[in-house]
Amino acid sequence: MAERERPGGREPSGAATRAGDAPALRLHRGGSRRTSGGASDGVADRLTALERQVEEALGRGSERAAGPAALLRTLADAALGAVAGAGRLSFEQAVREALGAMDRALVTLAGNPAPLVRAALDALCRYWWRVEAVGLDRIPATGPVLVVANRGPALLPFEAFVVAHALAEAHPGRRDARPAVEPGLLHLPVVGRLLARLGAVRDTRAAVAAALAAGAPVVLLPEGARAAGKTLRQRYRLAGFGRAAFVRAALATGATIVPVALIGVEEADAVLARVPLPGAPCGVASLPLTPTFPWLGVAGLVPLPTKWTLHVGEPLAPAHPPSAARDAAVVARVRDQVRERLQALAQDALRRRDSVFRL
Image (cartoon, rainbow, N blue to C red; front, top):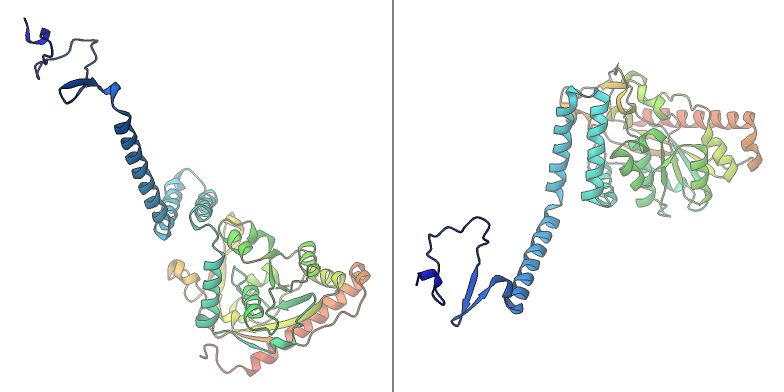
């Protein structure tokens, strides 16, 4: 009898199976013989539990990896993708795709970045710009208040967030203010999400009036994007206030208007000249030329560590009924009055300053 035909016999180890025959894996225990389909339930359960433990361990490892390192990898992939797509996309499309990828990475990996951004803002105010507030107690502790401040030539409205930070940290009433920014900034990937997390609202009449009606102070820069075109020679010369929608919002809600002059902000981004950008990618119409940018690359966009001082002027108490918000003559008169007070406040504070970088 052939070896393979004997009872309990084994196939030679080197034998090849015939085409179409499925090899049978036999498990031996205590002289008995079982196929893999008859494995004991205990073994299968232990294997399943072991597999589950491995998957959970890998999941915890991936969660730990989804921190700063993973965020940096995602941002690097987005930048490399923009470079790779430069040949098939226009410059504006490549920038938008890169910013969109960064925005998605921020949402996925960073979750709620507001505490981190607030900590960074606090560090800037304390150690970089060494912000000092003069007359902060002139701002009412209760009721709707519209804080009007001058703006520097930076692309981002740092001034509004610095004033809001001062109100939250140093004002006797610890008021939680809402910075008002240009609507286009809130639509930018990454940047818009961060500004919104910090409580920013659009500087439109409806949005400002809603925030004031809710009782929150609003910090507004009436020069808006017009200030971004100012050069170093034009510093502290206020640009026009436009159609003064902020005045209509203040009159409609009975808000007190308080002028605040920020000294040091317009030297932090010392714009020597501006170069127009064709196509205006992402809404940026010109490229600033400063003592550090573009010579130092992206690092040149960081504002200089100038000394910032906030000078709070006398409040303008509401002297008109809410119906005056529909009177164009009254709105224009109040707008001009606010601009004149803010300009005089800035010039007076500028004359009393002894050094741009005073520690």
